[in-house]
Image 1 (tube, rainbow over the protein chains, first blue to last red):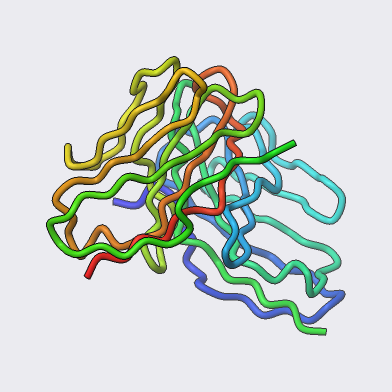
Image 2 (cartoon, rainbow over the protein chains, first blue to last red; image 1 turned 135 degrees about the horizontal axis):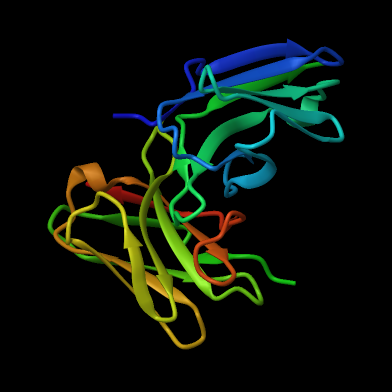
Length: 112
Length: 113
């Protein structure tokens, strides 16, 4: 049973517009949520994280929003750039945990 | 500063064979985790090594085993390979045991025929 779900396999956005990637989770014990970006032939690269006690975290063009009551988080990229085209993974971890629990990923394509 | 390195890059094996994958953690890191990423799936946690011991294990059979050496590098061994073991195997390193921030290597692509 998947604890972290990314229901949109792909997303296409025009350069300069906003990209919104969504993620749902089922385990209320998760303490942190992370977003990783993956290019072909490379390992996942950490992008941004958010603690479960916060509802928003911002880093440059990237903002993550957390809605604990809905068990939902989203990653906003503004403005989107062609170099943002990659697979984005949502992941979660408990504070005492070791393992990152990943979703299946969403492939973002940003066209110029 | 070298990041996480993995070898080999690609590997082709046949069913029933055994395979060993290797990982060198990022400089300064002492903890290594292994993940399996099947096609179209997210990475799945296999196990983590810290202080040369397996600290936590995911839902993988005993055919998957590992080792961590005194220099913190690690090996992942898979015995009696099945077709379903074909995947990208990712190594991630961190410092001080369970950690929020894990740095991933580029992975080893294993194909089982």
